[in-house]
Image (tube, rainbow, N blue to C red; front, side):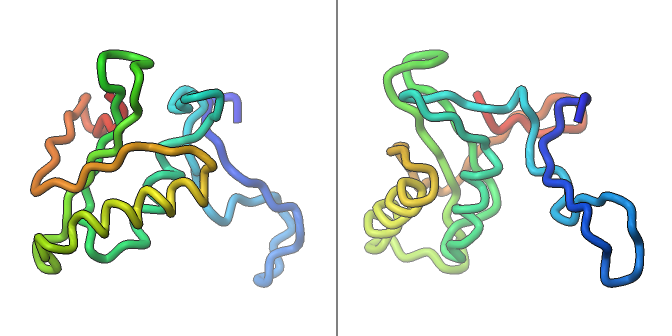
Length: 130
């Protein structure tokens, strides 16, 4: 869209009979949210999709570059689910998440599984990319 939203449009006739173009998956991301790291472009929503597949992880995460903007390491910091917390399994979980991100996006990101992530807010929106 011209608004900067990224979506997938389907033009096939809907099962309900509608013939208008539609976006069954809603807004997938924003053009200005794209991260380019080590020559690969990805969106925070793609990382979020991977994180949501792990019930051991909580709902909050942030993505940032160590050593400032476009630093030497891109880090995903994510909360663990306090109901499923097992300290001995944190290292294994971190490795599994890193592998799943690599398998999905084709890039190695550093994952840190922590007890709490503080996500800054800008107005009514959370800022997941720092």
